[in-house]
Length: 343
Image (tube, rainbow, N blue to C red; front, side):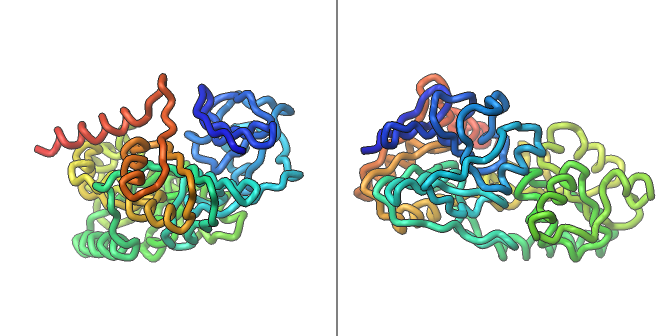
C-alpha cells in the first residue's frame, strides 16, 4: 500500500515503511531522496552531506554538484528503476516496485539529441502538469526550427545579427545543436558551462566562440550578422536590451509559454516560439493512456485543471497542491497577466 502526500518539502511516498521524498524543495523528513534532474526548481541547498540517501542519475548528480549543490555519493543499492523522462540530459522518472511511476518533468517528443520519455505501465501515476491545460498545444519540433531558420536566414541576408534565448540548462543545448550551422555562432558563457558538461557525456557541443571571447576579438558587430545563444533571463537582467541597442540585433525566444501570443511582449522579444522541454496538454494525455493507471496524482502548473480533465475522461485523479504554497495560483496569475497584456 502506497501513501502519496504533499507536505512542506514537497511530494512524499510512503513505501514499505520507508519514506521517499520526490524532488523536495528543502530538507525532507525521509529515508530516501529522489532527484529527477538538475534544474534548480528541483534541487535544494540544505542537504545533509551524509544524511538521507540520494537516488538520481550520475549525469544529474554531476550537473547538480557543478551548480553548487552538495549531495554526497549516490545511493545505488536500491531496487527502483530510473526511466529516461526526456526532459533534459540526465533527467529521469522513478518507477517503484513496477507499480508506482513518478514522472518528474517529462517530454515525449524527440528534440535534436533528446529522446522521448520511457513510459511504463503502472498502477499509480504521479505526473507533472506544467502545461496541463487545453490551451497549451505545441507545434511539431521540426516546424518550429524551420520557422526560426527562415527568420535567421532573412536577417543574415539583411546583415542583421540574431539572438536566440532559452533556459541555460536544457533548452540552450538544443538550440546550440540545431542552429550550429550558422556562423559565427556565439554562446553566452553561462550556457558554455553547461555545454561543456553535455560534451563530457557524449553530446557534441563545439565549434563556437563564447560571448566573452567574441567581445575580446570583435566578432560582435552591427555591420555583419552573427548568431548569439543567450539565457532567457537576459530579458530581465538588461543584456538583451543592451545587445539590441548596441548592435540592432533581432531576438527570438523559445518557451512553452509562447503559446500565448502576447508572451513575447511581456519579455520584450521580437519573436517567440512555443518550444518546450515539457509535455503539452495532448502529450500529457498520451502519457496517462500509455501508463494506464488506476490512480493518478497531478502536480505543478495546472495541477487542479488537469486532474479535473482526467476525471472527465474517467480516471481517478487528484491534484497535489500544498495549501500554503499553491503553485496552481501562480500559473493562473501568469496566464491572466498575459491575457491582460494582449492589447
